[in-house]
Image (tube, rainbow, N blue to C red; front, side):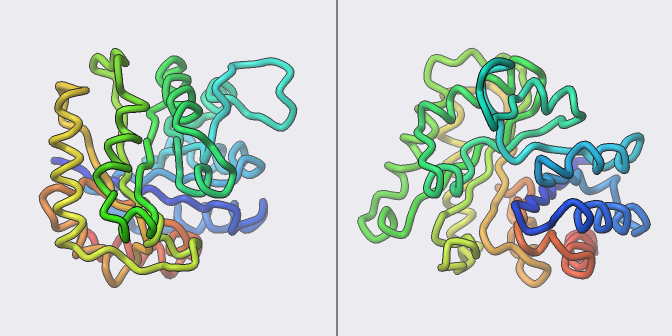
Length: 250
């Protein structure tokens, strides 16, 4: 049975105690793990404690960001290697907030993606256009550039990875928060899959992210081109997150 990916990006919404309380509450919920591949992305400070809670459970754990150098004199950085040793099996790479708030370049995203592959973490490459790109008719140009910068001349082999399409203007934290229409998501996801055929012989899972909640999630995951969702604020409370997971499997 093909599973639907549900990636819960807690960003910096929850502190240490709130993260652990929510994780332990989720462990008590009846969640259909046969149909859902759920990955929790807590803050760096909470990750090791959350890992203890999810150990030997169907939940997976991910890092919100990684540094590409394994170890060394890099104050404040946490590498893909260190996250792997702490129990993370996934990592977000190139999230729009890293690109547009913290100024990460396409070249930085490429190095982080490669670092994840080298240590055996499944990278989740986030791509998406801004409102300005949309207004200027440059959506495909932006996405093509982001994909090319990571995958050009990169030997992927059979290494697993995911792509998350998250239009910047649709992310609630961006100040816009206007969820993309299902028809638009279908078109973009089909285009991404076609574009990826030149880089990978495998069928790459493509997820949608951008103001996903329990009310609209089914309209996305029911699309043939959508393999799951990347969820932000709706994943940070027990009520909203369980409602979302229940909606998918209903």
